[in-house]
Figure (cartoon, rainbow, N blue to C red):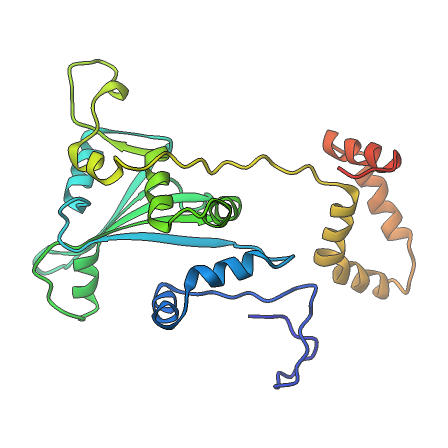
Length: 276
């Protein structure tokens, strides 16, 4: 997707460079691209661009027979509380057929779907049956980790700068955020041993840290944001006011009373001739 300079789209349409281009590559698209091209090379090329932003990346593991990753086992451990996690919540979404009460779909979410990072586990067999692709006899479980915004950015840095394999990145994330347990005698379950199947999945990887120290915004950053995000709105208002700047002066006066410490620090740095 892109923002065009004209209302009518043709082969000669010019793109608004300030707004950029949004590209979404689905799981099916990734598989199709990987059949003939190197997907990681594409990520490397994009990462090298000056204004690239990876807004979301989904990584997945499929266990076609649920020998290690099993929806049934994960669900049972979660319901019994045999787990520890950096995520503060988990949810389960289940759909059933009205007539015989059989499952149509089962999905678990660890973490909030509105957050920058969460895990999704679902019964892939039921999904395929519901879409009438095929009747699969074995239990197929898919586990996905969804990285968004800053977490997606940090993931790409690990993949490119450290040359970290995708599978290792996903499993390292799981090791950092989630652990399923075998009950022990200790009253503190964080000291219980990990479930054998969880150990098998993660035993050869290190935990992956995805936190990013927030950049302090400079005056130049703020000016760039105003130019990209609200300049058209301001232009529309001022045009309607026939160029009268009194409205803008009032807005600035009100805003000056709401300056936070980061705003004042940015102003001070700018006046001293530097940028943060």
